[in-house]
Amino acid sequence: MTLLSKTFHGQGVGTGLDQIPILEEMWDGPIEIVGVELALTEGAKYVQYAFAGNGYSPDVMLMLGAGEVSGRVFYPTGLSFPFAGSHVDCHICVKPKKQFQVFLTIYYVRERTN
Image (cartoon, rainbow, N blue to C red; front, side, top):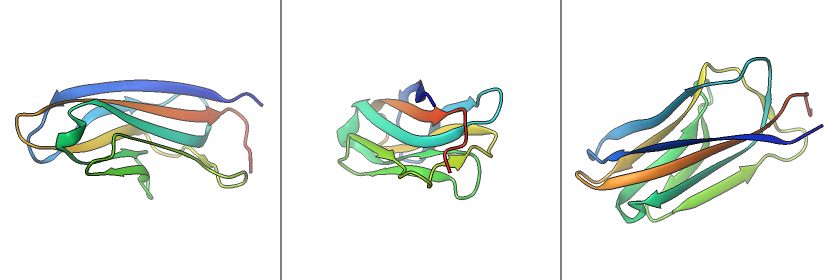
């Protein structure tokens, strides 16, 4: 089984409200999500929160709080999950008029790991 990944980029100007700078439809065929990573490369000190979602409930796969610039989680063997949503996304709340830049990486495998 091979570990694969896709990285998405989003940027914008904060409004002080929830924004979705990354909204990407997923892959052809079934996948198992085994890990998620978020990295803020611009405007991190103005971010109130950021999270990676999967368009399904439970939606949040990884959450960053105020002051955090990056985070990564790999789910233990047996706790990966089949992607069942329609998209992956990144929600972010940034102070008004402050620029931000964020990267979202999804780590996945094509075969079921559970």
